[in-house]
Picture 1 (cartoon, rainbow, N blue to C red):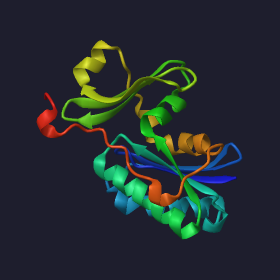
Picture 2 (cartoon, rainbow, N blue to C red):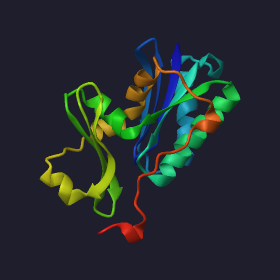
Picture 3 (spheres, rainbow, N blue to C red):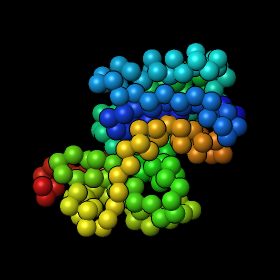
Picture 4 (cartoon, helix red, strand yellow):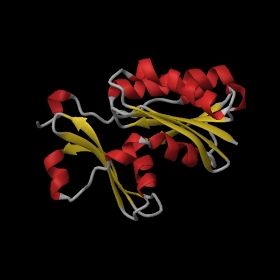
Length: 190
């Protein structure tokens, strides 16, 4: 089983390939360019460096959010386009749950920057069961709850996503949509 994974939910994008539970390639991108400029060239580079052809890909995993509005749209559109072209299914994954799976520290407080003084946050137990559902809250509330950001984990989410997706069945690409959590600006108390 060969899984290609994409993550564009934050400033740093990543792409990874997993084969039978082992990461065979992983690229992180934070070049100051937009994900639309770097994502597909990174996929091509990853495939070239690992000696994998597109036809060998069995499924595509993508972090669907919450996260950057434009980043999510780019990642989901790329995953859908690749899946349609290759005739494979897509495994959509929660960005916050993928962060929790990356941490391996029991109870995990997953966070990703949401701008305007807020963060997207969810809490998971050691088995990745959701304790607190995804939400957008003020950063000051996060600090009072002693929740920690881990930028190294967020920068390499595609590798974890690839491993998470391997045992999962995908869905048809046309059914994949981003998960947006941002409150309308007029509803946010910042």
